[in-house]
Length: 204
Image (cartoon, rainbow, N blue to C red):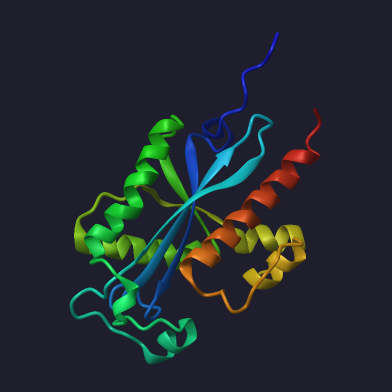
């Protein structure tokens, strides 16, 4: 008798992992602007292995009165006022990112999304602050997360994203790093590789 293929909802107790990376204009989620958001959908194949799905991303306009730390802007290389950014205001930006996440949660019969990030406390705090400002419903679990810092330390003895990716035999381009899309996709690949390594070690 053919067994039903594994479901991602069963793998993570009803939660759907969504990889998030946020670029900001500082470290204070209450006062500093969100500038970029990227979300990567995670899928599971018929063998129970994870793989990276579609990326949803948006440039975000600083909210009224937001603080823009020069050191943070210099680090990311983002010009918040550059006309080619085609940035959206916070509320439509969140809706653009959250809507496909909700669709994936429903399609996979999951109860909620759970954030995967490299140091998710940072990203989740900015998401929650933006949600509070905009009144957009948050699809993520309020406090539970998957942290690729911890997972990478366990799997590779590394905590920095670039070094963890390289230890996992992944390509890394320092020129593209610190953009939300690039970092989110690399984090997604890293998360999938670590989970799949554990999966492959399990007895059949």
